[in-house]
Length: 555
Image 1 (cartoon, rainbow, N blue to C red):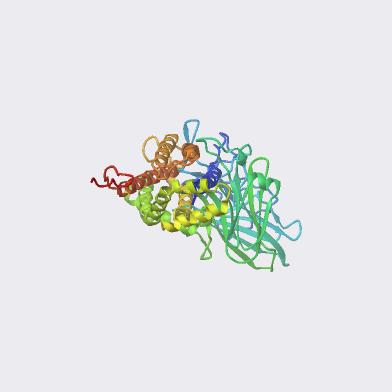
Image 2 (image 1 turned 135 degrees about the horizontal axis):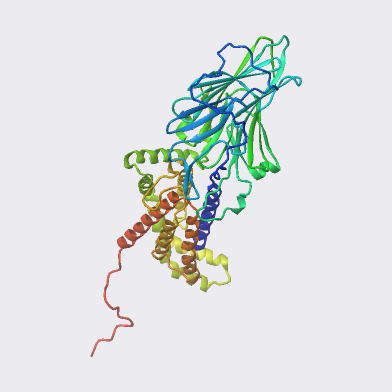
C-alpha cells in the first residue's frame, strides 16, 4: 500500500478518535452555592420515626392537599448521603462521599451532587386516571408511612386510588430498590396510567460544537432510554428542539454523562413509551409512560423497579436486576465494540489488583497487547521494509511511463510478484489490529475507575489532559517517523513533520490515561523498529568492484 494511502488511513483514524473523545470530555458544572428551590423544612435525622405513620394507618390526605414536608437523611459512609423529601417522595440531595468522586472548582475540591441544581425531582412518579379526581402530580405531597435507615415508604391518595412508593436502601452500592403499588379502594373500576421520570442537568451555555478547549472539562449530559436492548441518546440542544419519543419494551430510562448516571429500570414486561426532552434552564428529562390499565375495586397492582444514581461502576451496573432479570444498566457505559472492550477492562482491573496503580496498570496492559499483536505487527513492518527497498524501481517505472497509468500498475504488480511482495502486506495486518485498538481506546475513555486516579506527579487524574505528557508523546512520534524504514520524497518528509504536530494537538485534548497508552505504544514500536533494523542482514563488504572488459594477456 502506498505511503499516501497509509497516511490517509492514519489521519482519518486520528480525526475519528479525536472527535469521539472531544465529545466525551464533559463533567457537570459546579453546583450553585444556594440550595435548589425546594421547601425549607428541617431535615429529619436518619432512622428517625418522628412523624411517621405505622403500616396500616389511616389513608393519606388527597394529592391536591398540601401537607408539611418531612425529610429523611440516609448516609452510607464513603459512598453517599441522600436526603429524601415527602414532596414527590424523591431524593432532593444525593451527594457522593467517596473522596475519588470530587471536582475542583476555583482551586477547591467540592463533592459531586447528583441531583440537578434547578429543583427538579429525580425518580418522580405520576398517576393519571379516568377523571380529574384521579391525578397524582409529580410534586404531590406524600405521607410518610414507614421510615428506617434501610427503608422509606410514602403514600398518597388520588381519588379512589391509594398509591405507595417504597424505597429500599442497601448498605453497599449505588443501586436502590424502588416499588410502586396502586390500589383501587373505590366501588368502581378505575383506568390509570403510571409515569416515572429521571432528570439531569447540563449548562445550557455549553454547546457541543464549541468544545475545542485544552484541559477544561465540560458537562454534556444526555437523556437515555433503553428500548428493546438499544440505548437511545439525546442531548440538551437536540431534545429541546425536538423531543425524542420511542415506544416498545422500555427497560430503563435515565440521564447520564461520561462517568456518572441516574437511571430507573423496570420489569421486562408490557409495552411502554419513553420521552426525552430538554428546556432552556438546562434540565433534561427522561420519562417512561406505562400502558393504561384497569384496576378493579379492591385490587392492588405492584410495579417492581430499581434505581441507580452514582458513578458508572460496571460491576454494580451489571448487578442490578428487576424481578430477577438483568436490567441491562451496564449499557450506560458507552463502549465501542463492547465484546472486545469488556474483557480488556477485566484484564486491566486484574492488573490493578497486583500493581495498585492505574497508570502502571495501563503500561502493563499496553505491553501485553503489544505482545499479543506482535506477529501481525512484525508482518506489517517487514512488508513495509521490503516495499521501501523497491522505492527507486517504483520511481523508475513512473518516469518510464509518465502518461500511462495502466502500464504503471501492470509493471508495479509485476515488480511486486518478482520480489514476492504482497502490496497489502503492510496495511492488512494494521487493519486487523484496528478494532482492538478502537475497543481499547473506548475502554480507557469510559473507565470511571481512572477518574481522579493518580499516576505520578504531576499526573493526578488519568481522565484529565496532561500537556507535558502530550508533548513527550509528540516528540517520540517525531523520532519514530525518522526511524521509519520507508524512503521519503519531499512530500513524505513534510508529512513526517506534520503528523507528530497533529498528534500532539490531538493528545492535548485526550485524557492522560489514553495519552499514556499512546506514549508507551509509540515507545514499544520504536524499540521494535530498532530491533528489526539491527537484525536486518547487512551486505558483505567485498571491496571495490572492477568494471570494464578484462585486459588482454601480454604477449
